[in-house]
Length: 196
Image: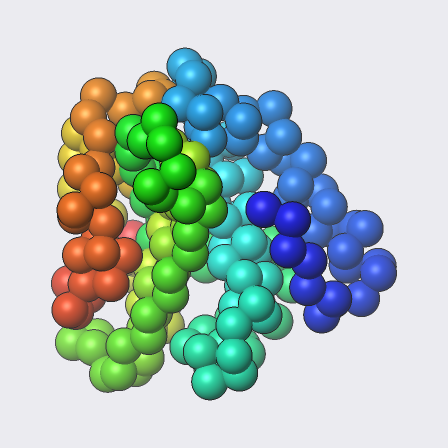
């Protein structure tokens, strides 16, 4: 929880990146602890931006060959937009936190994919902190006039980017721990586009 990476300038660290932290400060503890709250569209957007920033920073806690999963261009886009792009989907999941120390409090996984059906490189990043599981799924660049088809809402997973309806937390079902690897490291990404 206390890892720090010194890879950004002080202006960004104390500026827009700090604003992303402030944007989730009111509800993030409830998500981590599994306490009731409701996320409106603004909260979901803030959570998606914070998740992307956190996943990108987590890459710097790994060896250089692992960092290359996420292309440098995605770091630059976050710097300019300070939110995910239309080539990204975000999901929020709920997981019961075990009462013992059998699971780490914080875990992150990121996997890159070669050419997908949409063409180009894609990646998926998953961050688990306590009861909260958040994912950013990055597809190849989506053509103008199109958007990614959102994932179906499930009892243990809700789309959070782009925001849809309010999310009542905790979710009605928990992700079974034995399914976490398949969720975080799927064999492939089933991504489609639609006009929009």
